[in-house]
Length: 231
Image (cartoon, rainbow, N blue to C red; front, side, top):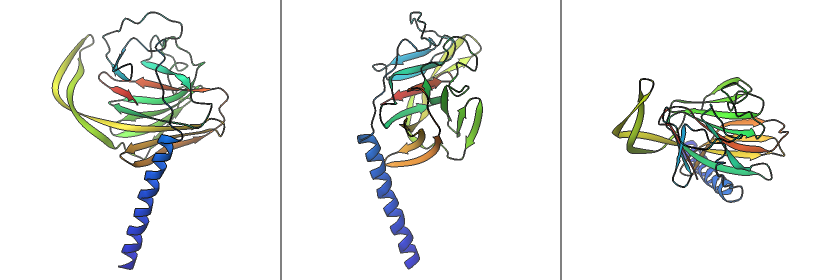
């Protein structure tokens, strides 16, 4: 009985520590990210004040040509560097997406490894799908044991692809959304990803390295109908 009470006491302490941990991240280290509209790929639809990104391929958006734009990869970079201090931000996602940090020098033209987040030495990527997380850097992919936790389920219109050139919509589809927190301490060479639900933060993966250039948040929205919401 005493062992059970002790175990419950430890769990309660851990819950309080988690709540304080997230409070610290969201207040002291909180960093607001905004999209660099000159980088967004034409397969990505922006809405809700450029905070919601949805993959719409084969439908293309009428963004003007720009040398910074990803012309083939379904990606976008954010405007603000996350290198001047310890930074933390959260992203809600559904479907299949990559949540990344990247040097601004990453290539933008074509579909080669030099352009995709996580497929080169310029970027680090958490690959997210409803059944698993994996981490990718410089073409090396590592499957991770932490499973995605559903943050909320929304009944919404869902786009899906029928054939090569035709999109259809279904209504009344329950779509699961998940939340990932990203923490960067550039000077210490630390990059961490967290699964976030309520006051709970579960570490997904941490990288310890040496960053040689300023870092920027990057997002890949991989499959039709997948989405990312910035907070």
